[in-house]
Length: 77
Image 1 (cartoon, rainbow, N blue to C red):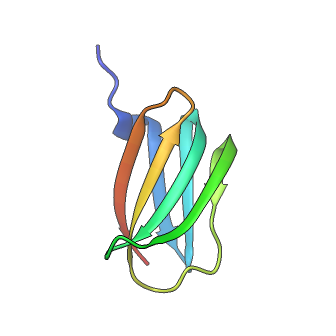
Image 2 (cartoon, helix red, strand yellow):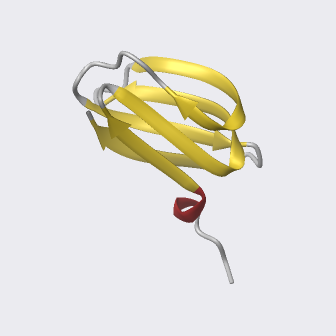
């Protein structure tokens, strides 16, 4: 059976922090404001990423996994 990306990536937003976990590993994380401005971009070489000091608002988190697949999720802090 086919595995959905949503089952492999979790994005949690709480306490001015965005936490991303990916079973296939994370290659890159980009966090965009709802207006499309890049807030943070980081190369990651692990299965977990934590941002800090992000202001209250709505963001789009783009996760590029080690297998090259992209996953986008809208989050609210």
